[in-house]
Image (cartoon, rainbow, N blue to C red; front, top):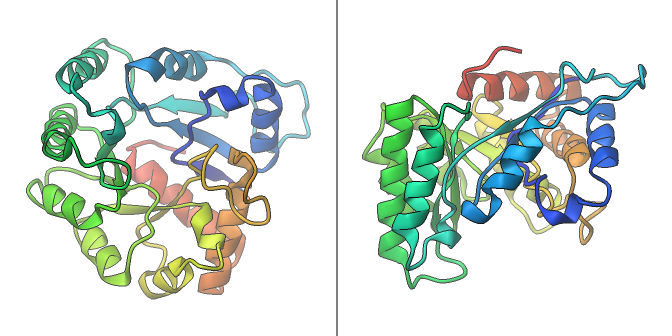
Length: 270
């Protein structure tokens, strides 16, 4: 079974003391690729350092070899980082995209109306600007849409047919899921699908696997039965299992299709 974690903040300080063990557990669980979303200039160096790190493990029992395993960076400015200095943050991110370093998406970008709407208009402008970068660079976008899914859909619709990507941490309705997938976008499904209060299993049952990718958003949104503890990429198997249960499919089949979807949106080969 090959799994791809399309959204993981593995560079954060919560992993400083046991990063190697976390990565070993990911590989033991069959995780072949981990995609790192950028937040703002305070995290860029950590993202780059982790993406450049080589994890060499002599343990031949791991299903994923050190040569196969990849940690892959994105570049963008998170909507919660859009403040008074957002133009400066955008300039820094755009300069990175033009630096010659390989990035796999513009992200994580979007809108967040949960914490603060003081800079709502600036969030929208920054979102639109970064979508334009993705078109210029032929990169997918990875969208944060907390309490703002409808507005994110409306912004993306302006660029429909010219941009592709993932609505990260999707937890919306069936109608929203259909709107997003009809635009050719994918839904990033994570630990929330395991929560008893979540309707995601019903949503997935109605829309199927065609536009689904797996993610953890680690260290956040830890799936059951580990909820309340730090999330990590190895727990993506729990997300895969919950989707398989919702669709009455084999886990291997869910892993295969969602991995193929991830490779497609990021324009990569296996």
